[in-house]
Length: 140
Image (cartoon, rainbow, N blue to C red; front, side, top):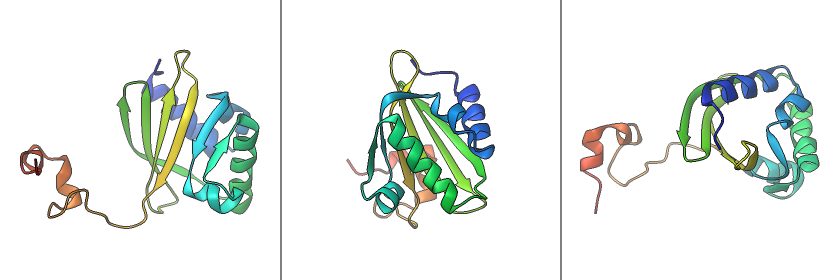
């Protein structure tokens, strides 16, 4: 069950920007699986399992960057999924996906930071992928 996207995103952003870890973690199941390339840097593994490990990871990221400020750039919704595109103080965007279980708790999440300009399809500029005209030119 996907929660109301507007309410979820507002609470997620407010929790991050106030460094309110209990409020943030209230959205996750105890057996959460979280994947992030930054987790590999901090934890030695790109996959963090369990709410205690995720809490420790995010506390470590805030210790390394105590001035973090999340700015939401865009939101996408899908079946039992919300994707938030955000950035920290004008930095590169990060797409963070959240999958919700039947009770509305997050069971799987992943952060995907932009690592550079990458075209999704050869020969089609990345910015044109969102236009209907671009969709008609995609290779079969």
